[in-house]
Image (cartoon, rainbow, N blue to C red):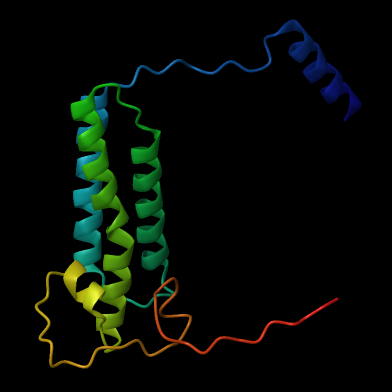
Length: 154
């Protein structure tokens, strides 16, 4: 082990230990790739008919996280490109709630008005919409719950 570390220290001292390749990212190309990834994500969500604990669900959430991070890494300099980046970011951020809404529909859970608007479903004002309150299925969702008392220490 020491012999391996000795060689690594020599490389590090010489300045040749780690070199990163230089990437020249073109915003137009990057935005086209991101747009295609968003379309691919929407297609996966539309075809999703499995459980929240499935590997396909994890695969889709992983792809969504990758898309969001890719949008965040794009740093355009022009104002028009900033607007396009903002639009791509908003599209990417709606993918995960859309996936969770599809899961709720598959499990016959009731939809909130926000979920219905994400899926472009028309909701009448006479409908009684609410969450069922389970934390596993509504992770990150806004719902009504009773507050837990906090412990007081002196």
